[in-house]
Image (cartoon, rainbow, N blue to C red):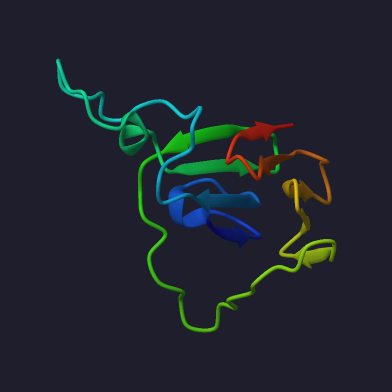
Length: 121
């Protein structure tokens, strides 16, 4: 899983702090997009949306997209279980059970479990 932590998401037209996490296989409880074709008997996980997005206001969305490459000057950080991180107005706590992203100003965020289930709060 790869996450993007930003102080604002003005690129997407929302000028507030945001966390976007992408799971290459899609998130299990995310909507299917696009829906599988009629009669398709393959693995349904390939159709689930692959990004979970939470804003500081608590707004939460799913989407299918690609985070792409890091922009010049953006840091690539691998997280260590049990270590607390502070980035762009967010507190991030990874554990063996999953990773919690909490906005410092509002207390809103999301928890992504080790099972890849997402719980916004």
